[in-house]
Length: 135
Length: 298
Image (cartoon, rainbow over all chains, first blue to last red; front, side, top):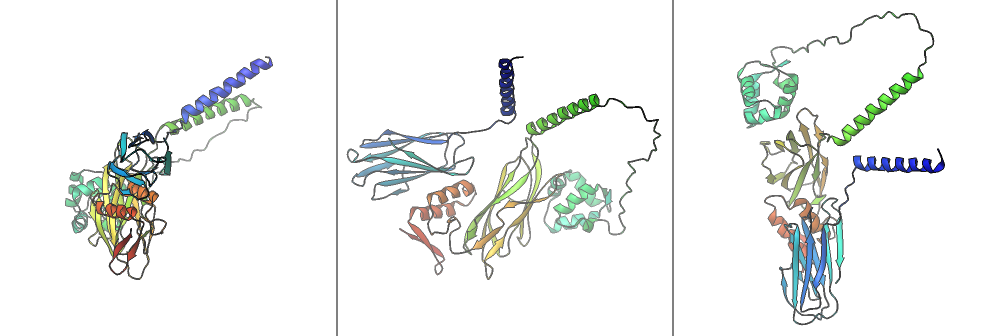
């Protein structure tokens, strides 16, 4: 047997061992179950779309910030808090997998930037997770 | 086998307001069997069933035994007989290494099979974990959740017992307990269910003098041994809402998310969740010891 054949055997053995290992002990790695993106962000309508997949967290806090020079006309669905500083806070509960749109109607074009933050507890680990969304 | 006192069983069961069905499920026998035991004067039953029966009735085994006579344990049969072996003449040197290699290989194969079997077969190890806040305000409600953990495809019988601290009022319990102490000092669930499963209750404790309470409980399965409920066992009284985990007089985003995650499924707890939301929406809160209400800072 020459050196090349030895190496082939070694590579095969390593490959076989790894296959067996991952076959017997499969690891479960799941991606974040909540994501968001801005469908519209220049105004007068700002639309933030939240995508929720299984396993769903029990609740999500969505915080959206715009410059306080903007005038908010309406927000849908009803937020829990709207501050004079242009911060809107939603608390979404009884969640199901799917998509949800959060709409903010301004009186004119958006002054400055919009920024969103999603906060939730990871359904598997219970870890507090924060996702920042920018257009 | 042991001989029990049928009349005493009936008396103890009726005193605690338990049904024959409850005992039957706890012991893992039929209601007819329980009825037969109660109606016979001194029925003979398996010791294992006697132990479960005593457990379900909250008494020691000795208390339900026939007190008119001593119950000697049946003598254990000799399992090992002493046989003297006559050994033949010692053989001359034999090559042992092939046998050693063969037996080592065989042992390795068996060991690999056992490891694989236990990796792929879910082991029916059950446990219970208690989730509760680390502090509360005396006279204000707080939740306790117990999660039964383990892996099993089929339903199993469980007895979950929780000792309730003195001066505590039980405001909510879910699911409905199978038994409650007459003085409300314990909650007991007996159920045939699949795990994981959740049990919860809401307490309101008026503390005088003491500044902490202890929560203890046990979980037992049919044929398995009783074990303590793990998790939170000590709760301190203070001036902060139980959801304000870092006691900074603010319910933060992470704190309200934790409340929804751990306690929002508790039936009848909606008003408390609404109150927490109200505090979260404000800039902070103070517990008003005069009015016994939370002053929310806007």
